[in-house]
Image 1 (cartoon, rainbow, N blue to C red):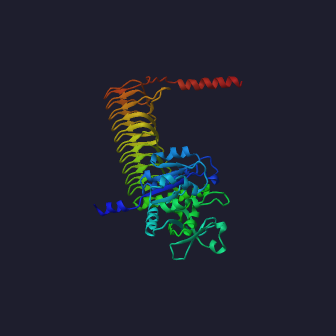
Image 2: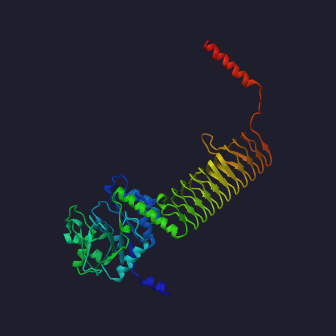
Length: 480
């Protein structure tokens, strides 16, 4: 047996509880607090993602209460468990309702569902420190320049890991209020002493609730060890209690994401102006200009340039792609070497292949534009399969909707579609065919054919001159 497997066999089993039952009254919202978004996804989703890097989803227990069904529906794809706190009576009560879920574990970490910036490394430090100190309770702390309103962690001495008490701000003495180390609300517990003393929490407080921080004094009086460890970066532990705090967390998360991407080799000019979600990936030597939005699960390859005011959501962009200003790309795929914009719109299901070009005010939907093909101006391409080396002239419209159903247009390799053409689906244009400018095409066109769908031009010489003379006579007669 390897050393690694030996350690795994003897390491204590760990569960994670995530508090997500609260209403979030100060947000003044009808939606659950933990479903408000920062960094492009719900607060709770961030916390779950971090927890899943520590333990399996089956070992994560989300405590739900307010709008429980909505919370469960949103994060159930993560595979975590849910424990219903029917009556929200405080954080201690939340652990009480999860008693049966965690009783088989050795350790449990308690997280806040509204503190999305907590890092995997910090939770690993908390877990390992708790085990190293053989503690019953370990408090994750943070040091704030202004700790007003937060509970203070009072250590037995300045250099000691051991905690004497957690004192709420209102109950703190003048000396204790000068302490800047605060209780983050994130803890590690040894399950056996936690459950043994959990029922000793009382509700003799202003809100008549069971407060989990009270476990520090309860365990201390029972001669169980209570210790603290500083998170190092206070941003990690701050929750979103107000809209202003939510905005601050969002800004911090996005700046941290930009720093991560730049450290990995991307260039982001003026990152304060960009909106880049947490799950976005960017390859090396790609340049992101100011005022770009990269949202959802977007991935950008290497050596690309994304120019200002472009918005890309849940899309895949290959290597060496140029996206000119003002493009909007949603659930689309852009292959290597393609060029988009300015002001192109790719709607869901669009695929722009290698070296293809989509230009000014061109919109695509459920369309595959083949390798080296181009649609450079003022065009709509919907529900289409377009081959390689195709030219789509300015002002071309694919009429894909008959008022009831959508229909497909197929344009094979090497086709030339003249400007201002209308192709009425379902229709197929064969390989190498030409569509004359301003044609309305309603029937299939064979390979290498020329299709004209317009009336023959008529010229009446002198007609305009006669028209003007007639108008002058009418005008003169009216004003005679």
